[in-house]
Image (spheres, helix red, strand yellow):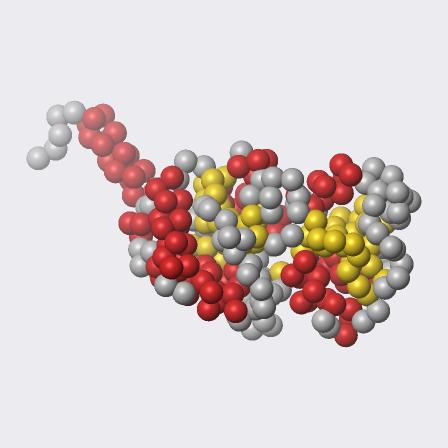
Length: 260
């Protein structure tokens, strides 16, 4: 029997179609799509065949396992991370994203899952320190759109700045002589550059630097998804309590990276 109220019936059908078109919550799907980068060893790297590995990758999978959901990794270039999260390309970001007040305006964050300070790197003996006076007129290489880039812009107005798109490019540009000194992650500069043939003749300059507001790295989710943040935090506590976190970290680091 046809409805005697065709307009109402059409509205109901349209509403049902719209509901079907909207993405289900991650919990309902039983799958979490995780945005990862793949160009930030030892935290993430992508092999020529597309295989992803690294600390971020291991942590993402461990968190999904602790939440009892399937983990679908989605590789994304760094500059597109936040736009892709807002566009629902994935549900959360596990890509060494430092928690800052500016980023909190665009996303919600879990508790930090690691904390690593920054370090200056240059040709051995080129600088006795990395003060603004010592680097005046010199070119600093740093990853764009990061707290480190903001730090350099604010503290080193007398220096020239070369912004690059990937953390590994910081050291490639330094080795190629396109800058005088680099500012980046202590771990990445040490493990992915100074311990490699390309890093021969280079050294860390001055003490480690902890940026204002801390350097804690968290999992980012869309604004307002407090339930997912709670589940991620519970999963993080679980993998730390049962030793999973420590076992994964030991694959890459010989020091406590947790920041606790």
